Image (cartoon, rainbow, N blue to C red):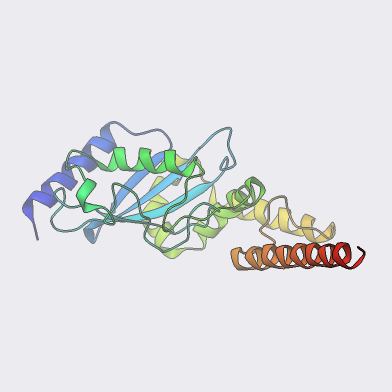
Length: 221
């Protein structure tokens, strides 16, 4: 293992602990300092409001001379889960990597990209309603993830997470939705593949109608 990488990651952890970054919590795995879990939370006035988004940063032993890999674990409607994201500060672009970039700058940049509509490998494009639906379900998704609980449980109070209350509220909302015979706002109702099929079908119908009208015009002369 690289002592330079370990020393750099240790310093970054101490800095983040002393100077917390708004909307971000990043912690190394106690068993492996090269694998960090991050949590993006507390985003306001957006389709992600109320969401808790867990992801991972996997550092190479050559860090900070080589960039890390970043994946999202919590569904967000913005990124594919458990797939590496292609950004200028990830392992997809070693040529653009700057060793002066830190975990803080990377995660701040990730939030900025999250709030944009830009598309890259590992990202998806969904409606704001779908993203709000994922935001509502994100905490329960995380609480059912053993790794999330193992890494972040000691920080639940800091994060404002009451596990028992969160489960009660989720069950209450689920029961009310069933009683009303509907799903909560923003619940994803159609996948990416289904959406593509629907668009293809619509385009086919339009093409058929256009052909019919053209033939009708020709033969009516």
